[in-house]
Length: 169
Image (cartoon, rainbow, N blue to C red; front, top):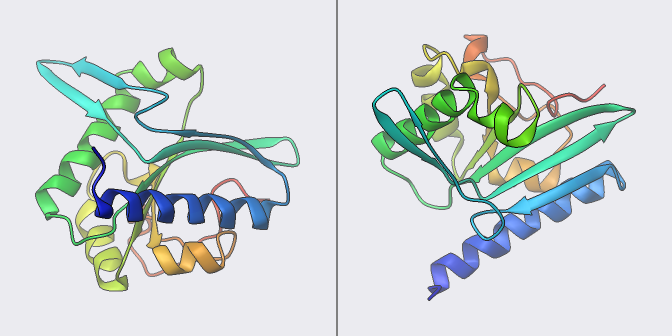
């Protein structure tokens, strides 16, 4: 049974979807919620992983498609649980399971957090990982008010440069 916190989280994910739909004026190609629609458990090496994002979606920018997972974090999650999520995505992409399941390559993972401090700290920490280029990090409020603006940080940058929505031309 869903708790009040879960319902609030789900409502915020819906608000993020509406913000994206509003800004892309109908270019939101699909939006799938997790885990009700998809359940991706897989093994890579000797480890088992479970990728459980809040959503998976696609956006069309004049014939150029961008696919992204959404990870919305309402609370201050423990750093080790966030590291495990980033590691699961790394394994998902590198193992070929994502491409096998979806027939797609090079998706992005958009993390939204409550504080800018968390965004900055995770960008520094995750900059050493092989999945760094796939991780796009911003605050919930920035995504809600301007999802196509230069609001995203990517750990691979190694600098304080903000980027616009992945794939946007």
